[in-house]
Amino acid sequence: MIKADYPVAIITGASRGIGAAIALLLARRKYKICINYNKNQLAAQDIVQQIEKIGGAAIAVQADVADEEQIVRMFSVVDQKLGQINALVNNAGILFPQTSVEHLTAARVNQILQTNVTGTIICCREAIKRMAYKNGGIGGSIVNISSRAAVLGSPHEYVDYAASKGAIDTITTGLALELADQGIRVNAVRPGIIYTEMHASGGEANRVERLKSKIPMQRGGYPNEVAEAVYWLLSEKASFTTGTFIDVAGGR
Image 1 (cartoon, rainbow, N blue to C red):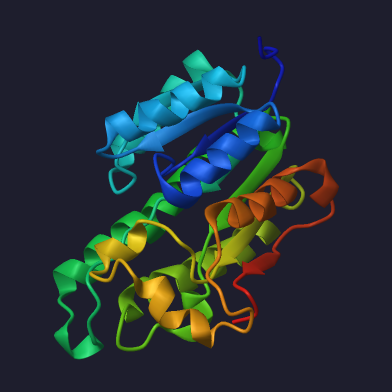
Image 2 (image 1 turned 60 degrees about the vertical axis):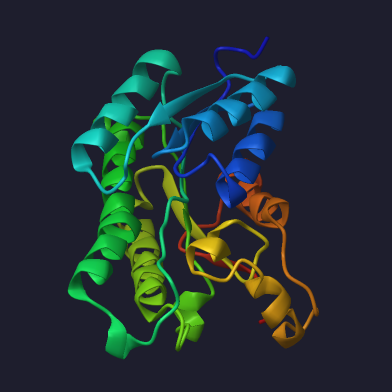
């Protein structure tokens, strides 16, 4: 049975892909986990069951991070069921089918920004209320999942998504400086081309295979490789690290 004083982590968008890999790794490192999901309850419950099979503790909490009220409710549920939060991983993000900027609509751009940017900021806000020294907290760590797209721009595919991840980089830097004396470290991981289901959302399920020859390491990455970087940033091994970015992108 996992101890009551083990750290508590909220991972947004944790029912699949990178988020699920992070949840499973943190559970093996004795974190109590909130598996946040938006629509796929069965997938979220499956991750909970996998964690319980290895002796961990996890709950699945539905919340669309594009909705402020749902975020607030999720944090309240975690307060009641898991206890004091120590770690937040802002992993939830969306993209839409590949297109050039000339074909974008305001509705599409706004939907991406609402989820990827606004949702991240509001989740950070709720974590700060609980973790900051000035609020009676004991500190903690926030890791934002950005993307190499923030640097490369994703031309002809996802410039809007890349822009949202550029905003995540800025949030990471600003928040790290704002919270450095409050016991909260804020860092980011920028995955490159990773084997996840997200590529299907962009209309090209085999995108990794098409692009892997452009990666210096000549292969796509795997969710567990991203998860390891996230875990290091959350851990005490990174105790003097804040405002930092780790690229998990095979050199690209």
